[in-house]
Length: 453
Image 1 (cartoon, one colour):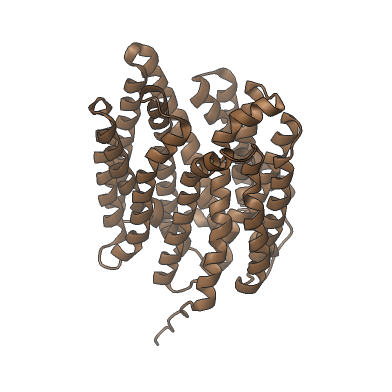
Image 2: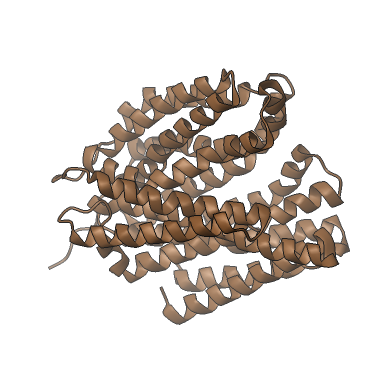
């Protein structure tokens, strides 16, 4: 008996993907657009150093902590409905952030933006899973989605700089309002609805435990990257791991858990999560690249963002091409080959004394090599799950990336700062960070080839 091929997406689905690109770019952009606005708003609101840190981090902390919960909520109440609710909340919170009158108000509104962002990201990825059932079309759509996310992250500082040339700092937050209004108008027309046909009650203790697991870990890792080894961040990480253990134990005892742990029994999905974490971890090297460009080469923040664009563009191109390569070469070979290329790029970054051209070359090569892993791992993870699991799978994939990035910044930050304090300075810190990343990606390449995920 021949199994019928899944239906291919048509014009409506591709238009729906264009609609989903809008919030994807914006949520990523909102993570980085604040970089240039921070000095302006700090002066205007009188924000101290600690308040500036929380203004920057509250968005990412809350977003990372709520991804798993919101992925599950989308499966239960409907992914399109949750996306539209999140879009409306994001628009309102953006206006509140733009017109904040105190540091505390801005911290709170940034946290609200994180809540809204957490509803948007799993919804967009899981809706793609619903709209594109043909595997080749799904791979193409996911590559476009990933490209939009990466592009938003890279363009944040550039757009922020352009806006701040002509407007006050609050305008950086207002960028998102027309985008979300467009989503609210176009979403009901072009996006399908999908939910779990047998939804169960949301287990609130599981929600609390998931927050207690993710937030302290992300906070602790970020603090370790900023200030080196200290007691409080270590306690936070340990507390998060303990809460994570309790979370897992509770899920095993629930008939309808917040997170279906059977997903981890899927070898391909598990490999996709691991590679997503590795991609996030190596992105932590960007910290030292940015510091080097600003402190050693003397570039402004905007100039630094522009110099980093070639690497981002290289990654975007490779992310789009990688699904096409897998039609003639197996995905593990494409990923492993890319990781070897990335290792070459990281080795070039250990030779930064060769000047800015060599450094930019290293960034481009490294970014292009990471591209296949950055794109295909999410495709692997999502194609390995059933439609009713898409929301939870999307949330886990994005959480893995967040934790990988936080871990990378912390670990590479501590290693680099230790080398810098040892007398090698910022150049030595970048060399050490890049060398560690080269080793990590080569190890990942070996594991991919061996497991044939």
